[in-house]
Image (cartoon, rainbow, N blue to C red; front, side, top):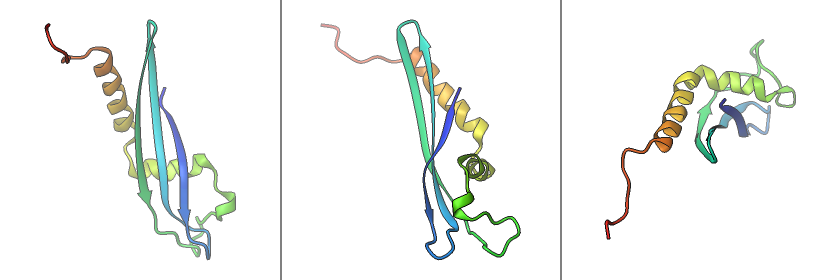
Length: 101
């Protein structure tokens, strides 16, 4: 199960409008004694409008609310699928390194 978090928010000092959300998603899977993990990180930019009826003051924001904004821009399903594919590739590598001697 992937876990999404908001790492930090960049916001206007005048009205608290969020201009950038920094997000991270982590996923992991344990197989036997090994744990495989994958992470993605990104940012989403916004143009806040304090006069909008949908505007939420900075102090009233929740992580769930901001994640909703992120998912309007970032394909949540595709991002999680890419992490799952990375974990699967780590569990079943198709290449190796080393020397035969």
